[in-house]
Image 1: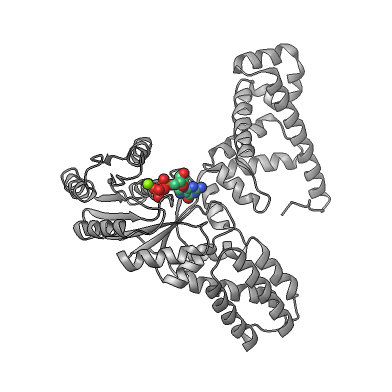
Image 2: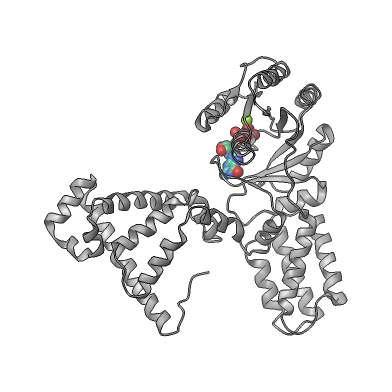
Length: 437
Ligand code: GDP
Ligand code: MG
C-alpha cells in the first residue's frame, strides 16, 4: 500500500482545483491500493462509497489545500473502520486467564510469550505460561525454551490431557501468586471439529477473561473466514494480528475490523520478544495511508536516544568539525535503539532491506565500536594520527580485530566526513540537500 494512496491524492487533486473527475480518479487509485494491501473487496467497496459520498457532497471545499482535506477524509474513514480507541486487555480477575487460539503457525506460542513479557513489564503482573499443545511435536519444548529465555515460568505436563493440565495450572497459579495465566493451545492447519470441541471444553472449564485469536496478517482474504469461524465457535474477546513487520501491508486489520467488528488488541511486528505493540487505530490509518508508522517509529527511537548528544554532534558537524569521537557517539546512539532491524525495514519502505544487510550493518557497528574503543581520545579527535603505523598496530592488537577491519573503519569515516562536509556546505549556502524519500 505504501505511500501510494497519499501520492495519488496529491497528484490528482492539485492544490486548488477539485473536480468530480479528479475525485473519481483518486478514488480509483485508492481502491487499487487497498486491494493490493489485501483489504477485502467488500470493505474496499464500502469505504470508497463512503468517501465518494462525502467528497462529492461538499465535504471538501474547493480551493486551498483541497488535497489535504481529501487525505484527512480518507484518514478519518479508515479510523472509523479500525475502531476509534485502543482496546485494552481485561486484567481484572485474579488470576486472569488468557486463552490464545488460532491456526497452526499463526504465532500463538511466540505471541503468548511476548504477551507474558508485556503484562509483566507494562502491567506489573506475574504471568504464568501454560503449554497445552500436546499434538505438534516439540510445541511444548518451544514454549519452555521461550519462557526460559525471557525468564517467565512455564507450566506443562507433557502429553497429559490439556483440560486437566489447564486446571492444574490455574491451581498452581493461585498458590504461587501468578495473577495472569496464559494458555498456549494447539492449532491445526485448518479449522477442525475435534480441536474446536477441545478448545470449547477448555473455555468452559477455565472461564477465561480473554480469548484471543492469533492470526497471520499475511494469509490474505482467508483471514476473514478464519476469524469468523473461530468467533462463532468460541466467542472471541479480541484478535492479535501477527507478522506485520515494518511492512506497509496492514490491510488485514482493516478487513478484520470491518467484517467481524472484533477489537484488534495487538499486532505482532517481528519474532523478538518485544515485537508486540498495542493496536492504535490512528497509527494504522497513517500506515495504510502511507504516512509510515511515524509515531511508533519515533517512540521506539526516542526511548533510547540521547537528544543532547545528537544536537552536540549536529552542531559540531555544522562547524565543520567531525571526527571519530563524533562517529563513535553516533554509533553508540544507533546501537542503543533496540530492534534496529525492524527500524531499518520500516524506513526501507519499498526498497526492501534484507536480513543479510541488517546483519552486516549490525556486525560492522560492533566491530567499529570495538576498534574505536581501543583508540585514545586524542586519536579519535585527530584521526590523522591513525596513519602512524605504531598506533595502527597497537589499536589492531588491543582490539583483537584485523587490519582489513581497521582500514574499513578509516575509509567509512573518511567517506562519512566528506558527506557531512558537503551537506553543511549546502546548508550554509541555503540549498537543502535532497534526502532520499
Ligand atoms: P503457533 O503454531 O501458532 O504456535 O506459531 P508459532 O508461535 O510457533 O510461530 C510460527 C512462526 O511464526 C515462528 O517462526 C515465529 O517466530 C513466527 N512469528 C510469530 N509472530 C511473528 C511476527 O509477528 N513476525 C514474524 N516475522 N514472525 C512471527
Ligand atoms: Mg504453538
